Length: 234
Image 1 (cartoon, one colour):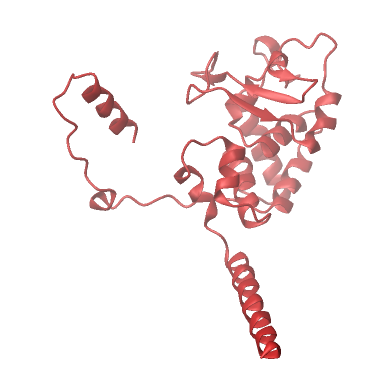
Image 2 (image 1 turned 30 degrees about the vertical axis):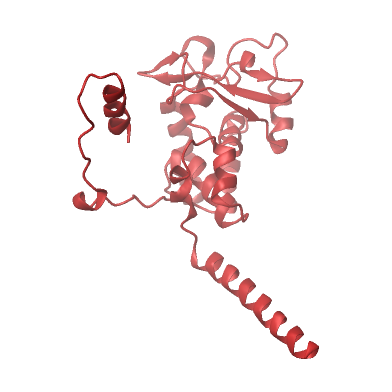
């Protein structure tokens, strides 16, 4: 899709006479990778096994569905304490903080109510520097790195008998939980995650058998109730 957008821009700029036909996905046997995720109970067991001093950044990732690099680069100036809103405007690339997200778009994310208490605990008097500071970090500003987050996560997983990676255990799992455990629709999840395209969240909607059964039975019960009511009316 990125390549298609580039070619479309080239055509509109009159740099190419026309956009060439693109092959269909099925011609290349492209298969959407299966999202690996865990339930909220298992996810919280991992987070609770993380030392308390490191726990806030992992809880922030769980509740706000952002990338680890964005959490590492988050600064106090990005947090509106009055309205309790985070502005995601920077990330990390090649181990350096950059003034842009992966997509180049700023995201406004409300602070989850379950995280308000945690943000107050780590609040600094000056409200300067990085929101999440790693006391063991050697980086300037004591910020976390993707490597340090992954190391802490893997160690915690080992303590509770899990093997899921950081990204799958946090963002993928939280997104999947919203649909499969909490009953949100794909369009509702799209609003939360700020994805431009609904297709981007469709991968999280591969519900499990239990969720499918629940929806099927709910429909069946409504049909039976309607029929019984209709019979009485006649």
